[in-house]
Structures are given as C-alpha cells and as structure tokens.
Image 1: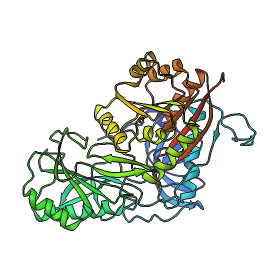
Image 2: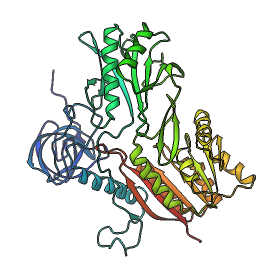
Image 3: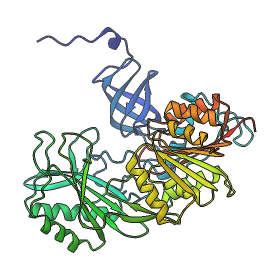
Image 4: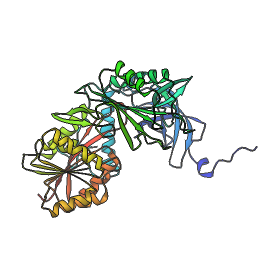
Length: 479
C-alpha cells in the first residue's frame, strides 16, 4: 500500500506531522494548553507554560495552527509547580495544577483582557504604554482569588463504571468518557469524597451493576453529592438507569450508618441514552427533600436538581462585587434577568427597594419564591418566562428599573434581551459572566447602544481550572 499523499497546503507549512521542533511558549489557551510558535506557526502544546522553551512533536495540523505533544522542557517557567493531585495527568477535571496559583490569577485576568480587545474591540486601560489609572479605556482589576484555593466545590457529579468486578467512580479522562477511578479530589469538599467511597463500597457489596454507555445496560449511572458549607448538611442523589433499585433499604441504611451528616438521599431516574446526567423523575428515598446553605446572610434551600453556585466562598465575593456595582441606597428598582433560584436577587434585595427576578425555568422560579419566603423577604417578585418578553410587560405595568443585573449561561445574553435593556435604559447594568468571550461580544452591543463599561473584576470561582467569572459595571453615557 502506497504512502498517503500529503495535501499541498500541509506540505507548504513550516512544520510537519510527526516531526520534532523547538517551540517558544508565549501564552495559554482557554483550554489550558500552552500556545507556542515554531517558525512563526502557532502550535498548541498540552502541559507547556508561557515563558518556556520546549521540544515538541507535531501531531495534528490545520491551515493556521496545529497541536503538538510536549517531549522535553528545555527552559522551565519560574511559575511551574508540581501538581498536588496524584491523578492530575490522567484526569480532565483541572487544567492548571502545574501553574502556581498567583500566576493563574494573572492568566485569568489576561484572558478577560484579550477577549475584550479581540472580540469586543474595546479599549482596556493600563495596557501597553498606558497607566492603569490615567489611561483611557476599561479598568480590568486583578483577579480576586481565594486564600485557600482547595476543597472549594460543594457539588460532585461522579460517573460510575466497573473494573475487575467492582464499582469505580471518578472523573472522565480529558477528552474521553473513560472513567479515572479516584479516592480523593482536592477541589471537592471532603464530604464528597466520603460519599463516593461509601457508595462504591456499599454498591459493590450489594452486587449493583454500573450503567454502560456502550450497551445501555446496568443500573448506577452517577452519584451526585451536594454539601452545605455553612450547615454541614449533605444530600446524596443516586442516578439510575431504571425505576427499581435492588436492596434499596440496605443501600439507604448503609449510607446513613457510614455518613451521619447525610440529611437527604434521593433517587433520580434517567433511562435515556444521553450524556445528560439527570432524568425528569426524582424521588426522596430517605430524609428531607432539600438541604440548606447560605450566601452571606441569605439562606437557600437546595434540592436535587436546583442550580446553586458550586463555590460558596467565592460566590459571596462575586455577589458582593455585584452589590457594590449596583450602588444601591435602598430605594432602587432592580431587575435580575436569568435569576435562577433567586441567589443574586435575594442578595440584592437586602439593599434594594424592590427586586424583580425573571427566569425561563419554571422549577427555578418556584424555588426562588420559596427562598424569598424562607428569608422573610417581601420586596422581591419572581416570574417565569423569557426575560425579553417579561421585562416589557413589567414596563407596561409601571416598573421602571434603575439597575438591571444579568447572569446568563455560557452562551451569553439573548440578543432580544440586550435590545430590551437598551430600550429600558436603566442607569446601571451589572453583567455577571462565566464566559469572557460572550461577555465581550455582549458588552460591545451595550456600548454601541449608549453605555460605557466603567470596570470589570475577574473572580476566580474555579481555581486550578481555566474558567474565570467576571462582574462588569456599565453606566448609561447620557447621565
């Protein structure tokens, strides 16, 4: 069989597949790969860090860039550290444990700056040749990090499989659905590790089979654990491929005996062949339907399927910044679009005159109303529906927002909502974002519509990963 012919465009590139080159690493991608150059050509190199020189082997090429593996470090970065996690090289949960925490905070700020400039075409103060305080443009503050950036996650969603006749549970290897069995995850609350270990032990003893994605057979798909950081309460959710759990009483008794902090054991049924974790049906096997936790002084009920920020320590930092940017004096009308279970709404309601929260998921609105009642807050009103439909209706009813807060999913704000904001023209817009790229895109729309971006504060909600959250303040320019 003849040798496969290399396409003409590939043959003309300055690097070739299978060959080794010395690369200068100058950046980090949003996936945590080192970004390097060889003869002016860009290569993404997993495990490499900015400031390093490395011998790399090219594995895959496109016309403008390629991917290479790290063969040897010729010059190491001063920010390189040894990962604390024993399975870091296999697991895809973290991407930056080989980079010092201080350096991570700098990388995350730079990620925000790059997106604002490249995607939003926005000027950032303090960038090349400018003084941060005197230069024109958006002030991007240093990333707000954690004093102790470990054990911060209050929720684990652990897929289960089988190995040598017993259950395994852990996280997927990067870019695959191969489960890496784990005993401890250093970014999870310790209670999450304890629950997973006990479920593996009890399930194996009771002869429970794990679900197989390939065949669609087997029972146990995932174990979801939620922990109240302030209250210490723990919820365990068994997600199964079927409505019946064999020897369920023994399973519940085993969990309760091993883990006295558990206040709720739930069963979620998911019989679909899908990557989505939860099915539509959830039952309480034992204990309470909810557990409780706090953000600041606000108490929240957390159910099996409700969304609650996974880093409660940094959530308080993020929401504190949103409260600062809203500049509330006690009389303002605030609209919280994408309000979820009311986390930001109720945090703001402590200082606002009236808060209106809107969310498309009806279950979340039901939870938000319960949380308002739980805290005795009467100055909040929640409604289900698309924000771009509900907000104009509120306007017709006489609601005139002084501040609009948005905290959209990763895909950013719906264009119709941005248009509605520009029509309503609140004095301030506070934009909380989990994606720097869609944030930059949406800020451009609001700037073109008459708002100025005063400042942006990145917040490190997920240490040791590439993710960064932001809180941005926009002020109407005609004030």
